Image (cartoon, rainbow, N blue to C red; front, top):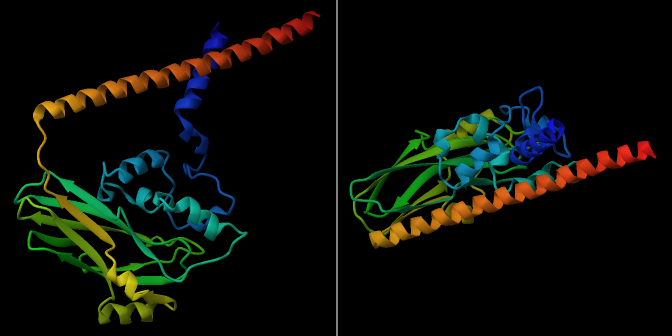
Amino acid sequence: MQRYKLVLMLFMVIILSPQLVYANETNDYRPEYSFSKDIFQNLPPFPYDFFEVKELFLTQQVMVSQLNESYYLQPEILTSWDFCAEYYYNTSNPSVGKYGLGFLPARFDIFNHYPGAVITISAIAYATPGIPVYQGLKLEVNESSHTNTTIITPTSKHILFGPTYPHFSSSWAQIVELNIKVYNKTDAVVELFERLPDEYYENLWESEHDSYVSGNSLATLSIPRLKVVFHDEVEQDTDEIDEAIKKNSENENYLYFIILLIIIIISVIAIKSYIGKIYGKEKKQKD
């Protein structure tokens, strides 16, 4: 009986803890790839709970300013990483890009704000994978009279991104943080644009690095890199909100029950299979 309990416990651990697959002696839990991990040699070790934290970040339950470099410097934080990993770093395809920047998240939607509120948001500004050169930009805010935005980080409003090919530089991704003061309870939009660096920074970065670029095209300079949208919602009736919360709670309980039932069924199947093997082996020995 103890043997059967041990099988059940082991099966539950495997089902509920998939991150254990990546554990190793170096405390680097990065997934295995078809290419060398040398491309990550300048980055921090990959955290064991990275994918759980990534989900919280992508759903905006936590801001990147709440994370340390062990999380936001991992290229796996990007939603496009699976494609980029195969396209740029697999040895069968040595293609690389010439210019590429992005923000993640690229949009924030703010609800139920009030006049006088100060909203702090942060995002990852990054050089896209497969870029072998340094890239520079200046940040510029475009907004209406309903808001007043201050760029907290970087204080100079300028960012120099390191290369992402053939290795990721430790400066390939950086935090951008904004403070937005809202004057009116109304619909409003704050947009953050990429601009050409000031002459001082442009000359400095060109002199410091053999391969440096800025401002890929008029198209990239005319499209906002980051957008914060304030919504003036009509408040719902309290009874409707309570009813919606109740339904969501009931749905969650039902989902948990289904998941538990599935785990039990799979466990029973595994145990039966194990018992069958033992019985078959014993019968064979008797015969």
